[in-house]
Amino acid sequence: MHLLIILIIIPILFLSQFRCDLRFGKCAKVHPIFVEQSTLGGIWYEQKRADTLGEPGKFCNFVTMSLEYDSAGYLLHVNNTAYNGQKYRSTILTATQTDESTGSFRFEVPKWAPVSDNSSPNNFVLYLDDNFSICYSCQQVGVIKTELAWISSRQRFPDDRDYHMHRLEKELHKQGVNLKFDDVNQKACPARGPDQIPQPRSRKLNLLKSLMGL
Image 1 (cartoon, helix red, strand yellow):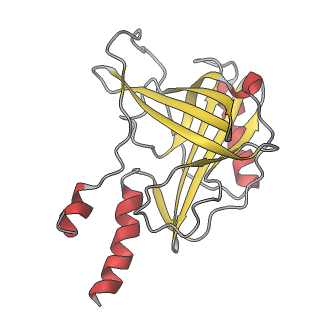
Image 2 (cartoon, helix red, strand yellow):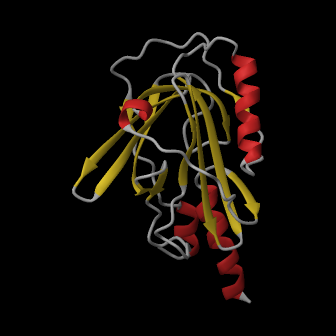
């Protein structure tokens, strides 16, 4: 009985550290598109997001992405930045492209996490044009999945925003992704200064450590 409880609790604790949407079921079979540095790289201002990846809130969020090639293949460098009311804080992540013909990427999962497949992609670019992009992330842990999604624009205040947000959410629905989106407040954003300190996301859970007696 104790072992069964642990096997149930550990996946929930692992997924809860991302403060994202936890559901029973399997990740949607999405159709990522082809991407390259010239179209994906640069700054994107978040317009809508479903849940969070650890950033402090939904205020002035933007992401800087770059796609670079090394001996192991293409790497996607992501710097998620948001304003927490006092300063800008960043979360820096790197993913490996799992298929060079599509925007499919794999962010590293902690080795201790109860994930059965450590090679399948868990982050996808589902839509991309000169002005807008859709990124979707899903990680399967047993019978539980965690989903996140972002709709972003090259401009902080894009023209005809409501129209584009509606059509882009419909694009997600067509691919089987049904999440509740929140607007990201891009108004009155303070100028960035030297207080923008990169904060690598911690993958440790104090509660899990205490349960394991570490």
